[in-house]
Length: 121
Image 1: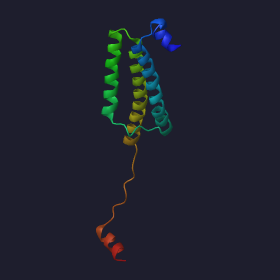
Image 2 (image 1 turned 120 degrees about the vertical axis):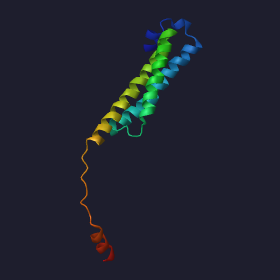
Image 3 (image 1 turned 180 degrees about the vertical axis):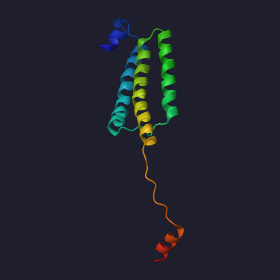
């Protein structure tokens, strides 16, 4: 059991650590649908770059906090979120470069006089 590896003395499992275990499970569950959707559509266009960047920074700081207070559960929660965010960010970057490198054909220049002829007919 993963929680046993992170919290070896289950007999002393406190209320706070139980909440952290539940938070880790919920964190994993709520990230999975977005990752599946992003993988299927191969698109993360709906996500703002700032949101993704700040989400990684925010969770990185929680990892540092988890290390400081010696809580593997806090760190694990943030690591899961960072991995999910990096997964979505990958598709954000891939989508950006696909759009950037796509050649869009330029429509033929339509003379204004030709347009007026078509409108009057």
